[in-house]
Amino acid sequence: MLSSVVVGSHTQMEMHIFTELVGIQMLLMNTLEPLLRGDKIAQEQLTILFRQVQTTKATKAQELLAKRQPEQGEIAMHSVQQWGRRESIIWPPRHYLYTLAMFR
Image (cartoon, rainbow, N blue to C red):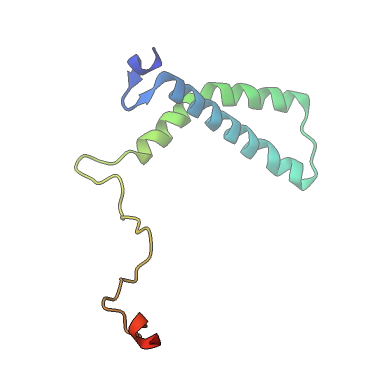
């Protein structure tokens, strides 16, 4: 059911979750600095901050997504991640081969 409602390449639920995460980030960024300085936040300031986050979080989320989407013709992944070991297998091995004939 959720897969039928797609906005671009994101479902509505993914967009909602991302928007809420942006709101939480905005709230933390605006409240932690005064608290870490030792200042107290008044209830009125907190109420104003909550309203500001509620009204601007959707726009900020859209701006962030627009920044992160690649331009037309641009590759989304700029570099290819190399996985695994870089050494190769050397054949034949460069050490002595022990065989059963040696132990007769």
